[in-house]
Image (cartoon, rainbow, N blue to C red; front, side):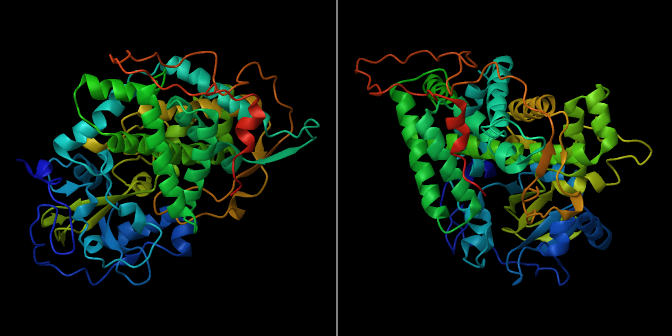
Length: 491
């Protein structure tokens, strides 16, 4: 049995690691000098902050994420080290959070990120053969999508959301909207829920639960439990009555490949695809809008066709990375990293936000950020994003529709007045208000939640002699586009 396959054998507790063995003695104390990865300087300008860390510490910086210094890790600033950890060719690093020694031993203080480290029986925390088994049905199902037809679905939903920007009485001379709250937050989530085959009621309730869970407020734990319950109900429904959607195809490949995923494991993968698709795509849309509206040369190039929208999106990956840090790689043995002696159970943080300032990656002589695709926003190795084409399609289509519908759009406030959340993981402003002068173009499609086109075929029906339970009411139909967008909770 390899190291990767043994990682799933035994649950971690305070006295043993996932192998069921006692934690080894920590040979090396935490470095005497470390830097805070929190505070106003970090929040307002993380890119300058990362560069100052590089000058002070080099390729790897010991950082703490809160005031007590107990929540800590090694911030990986240079591309080469990031790739080494993500690809994990030496089988040293893992995504299995049971290897996080401080977490296992209960040494972490309260922090908004701590609940995200709880071990889940999903591909997110699995390695080796178990990771392949848990990710198999989902990856195979994603490969069934017709991306050309999926684009039509995304266009439909984008058109509906943009039309909702305008008041009932018609557009004013100047209209204002928060692109983050009313567009970027909604579009990726609505697309993913539609691809999963949710009916109207489930989509609205699931969106509310995800929003409340990610807000970190007092209802977050209840919302997380509700979300788990809804994902299980969706998986069970599609097992009884499959249709042209990703969950039904997951069931098909789970049977066809004899992978043996149970309802809980399938539900976890549905949950992961919806939430992961929402987070990165939302921030990517928002930050690209910000870059285009505050970079006149780039905006002119896009409008004139000298620069494709995807080139502008790629530039954002370098200058304002949507995902700043991948928090969650742990050493399964003592190792060396950037001159530091790392103990078994220590955490590494992949700092994607620092890559744009890595002197080995970008040339100062000309702007290569439009075409340089060597960023690690999609990850690398076995835990890389399984659907980069779909993620890119959602963002690119959403931006292209937005630019076509609102050609006069501009910032409603100065860029310097925007406020930012702490970019532990993602970085976007707390709001992105814009104004635009022109009325919407006529909406020609997208009037219903169940679109008339098909973005995926029906999976083969399972052979069964048991009668199928069918819903008592028609599923998946949204009478008018305003029902689709009116439910979204305000931030």
